[in-house]
Image (cartoon, rainbow, N blue to C red; front, side, top):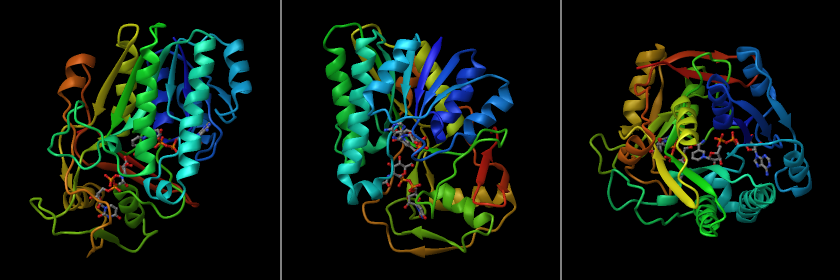
Length: 338
Ligand code: NAD
Ligand code: UD1
């Protein structure tokens, strides 16, 4: 199949491009490089020997997208492009609503014009907001608590309205929990700019001495060790989840929604311990105040995705295989098979 991957040079998109190529598909990428570089795709080509058609433009620019669809025959679109920083979205809501919504609308409009109606969308567990219970099932009510989360919930609504036009759309939204890690080749990975907000990239930078110590945000939650619990899923499993979803799209005029998680929660202290054990590096930390807006515990129910897509995670333990400090700012962390 010829798959168009939007946001394909980014963190999760690039891992998915790799899995798509391994699964024998032809891949084209659109990315405006607002939060990535073409280097990830160059490395994938080096690893696989397969070409990736790369198009550097903003999805909001409908004319360029239209031209791309006129010159290609795509079977499926995987839509990763978007802004994703929760904290920034609170300060710059217009930027988030504009980019995430406009790019999706522009994409759907051009897909509709060219009769391409198979779409897989990157949603997020952030749409659930604070859960009433765990594990979180897909049918739980959505109450996102920040603009980023609202954009994801709104896009899901838009997609659900689109399938109801009965024009043959087949759409799957995947709600990722906490993707971490890197392809085991160590050739691609997560490379956040500035000081990371998320736990695992932060620990990685402490491990290589780029940051002094981790602040554990609160140890007085109602959890076994008092620290926050999350569902950390390996990015390669997320990528393989997309390939599985592509092989089992819902029937025409339907939309499917699945959680992508491990179904298990780990506390901050467990993550630190696992990282220390696997890497042999010390991870100095101090306990600090709770981070505003944080939730004590959430993890996914994965029954639906196991049942319908026959997909489940392959990597479950924290075992960093290599940490590279590549002269500059690059931190690539690989997590090996359990
Ligand atoms: P990323 O920032 O690494 O990748 C997103 C890519 O989209 C970037 O390469 C960026 O340059 C590109 N992009 C952004 N706006 C664009 C536009 N208008 N036109 C063209 N390209 C554009 O992020 P990621 O972690 O790979 O996330 C991918 C998707 O998954 C996002 O939609 C994100 O919201 C969602 N998601 C991510 C996480 C996570 O923890 N990383 C969790 C849940 C959901
Ligand atoms: C955040 C995003 C979510 C996104 C996810 C993965 C929010 C509200 N949500 O979730 O949308 O899908 O990242 O990218 O921001 N922690 C520390 N010290 C740190 C960093 C984190 O103790 O320096 C703790 C947090 O309090 C939390 C856990 O580690 O208990 C995980 O935090 P993080 O990696 O930021 O992920 P989420 O908060 O789950």
